[in-house]
View 1 (cartoon, rainbow, N blue to C red):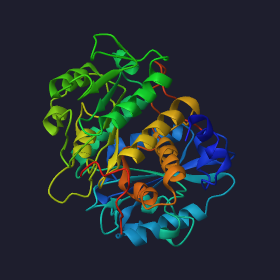
View 2: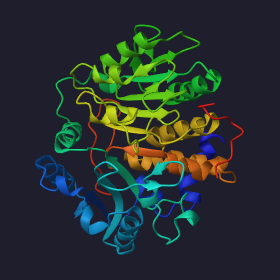
View 3: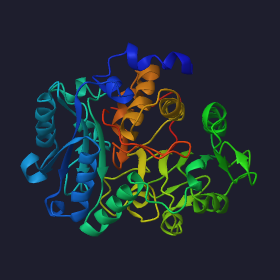
View 4: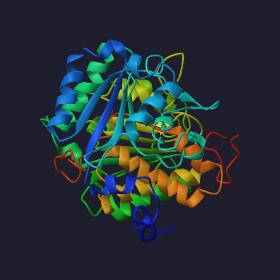
Length: 398
């Protein structure tokens, strides 16, 4: 599928309203539904965050999980009722879940946790609708007020552009694996050649002034953990990894939880895209996943888009390419809608198989779906409109 053809996807295919919201072409005011664990309702930074969204033009409703439903089915029914109550004046467009799965439930499919269950809500039967989400969802996976303060503090700082340094906004990093590396490197090279190089993004690997961003490729450029850490420490606006992963690390080049925890204090808050198996497993019962560490560390990520189960090479290739098509070609505004734009590409290419609906389930956003990324040294402006069968592409975890 070529990029030009995909450019027409949102206007030629029914995305249940996602198209109009993504492109900013809408009549209704956008509504954010915030469903919070009871213990966070009095959090001062949550109140500041909601005030910030209201001042940006959003309609915001804060709901106690105890009133919304304490299991996934009840919560979806509550969200569906709110969605169906949308009017020509105010339309529910975003859902932010505040709390870990023990506090604010997620849906377990039998193989993976997914918050997409709360996004595809216009039909009563989720299984008939899971590839056609109606709203964009993100989760702030805090277990306590201290963790939530860190997450919200970063979101407030980012969206209010409270930075002493801005060089990182024009720096981007691409990490590629040592297995099926032609696919992973080819995906990143598509983004570099079509978007990041011409827009002046740079990196420091393999050359000190690498045009288009870091090429931290395990095979072609022999990148290792030390090389990746140097680039991360230098500050990046986006970090995109494609390769093998686990619940607690990226495999090649290796990046560990300790690498994330040891990031130095700086203005940089990268958006992290993890095209790897299980690295976003926010439903873990024995500690935090790799993605949650990125989100919860004060010097970590502003958001993490990753998987709660195994991912596939070819589907990840399309997902990443379409994300950047949406960001730079189609001017899709928010990360929640950008993630949906990427998944819509997977659906178009793999919709007749098992992998497309599976991808809607496994890819989840840990972060704020209304977030707008910094682009080309410009301050982001919050929009006022705004059973699994093995794929032929091969599982990255195999």
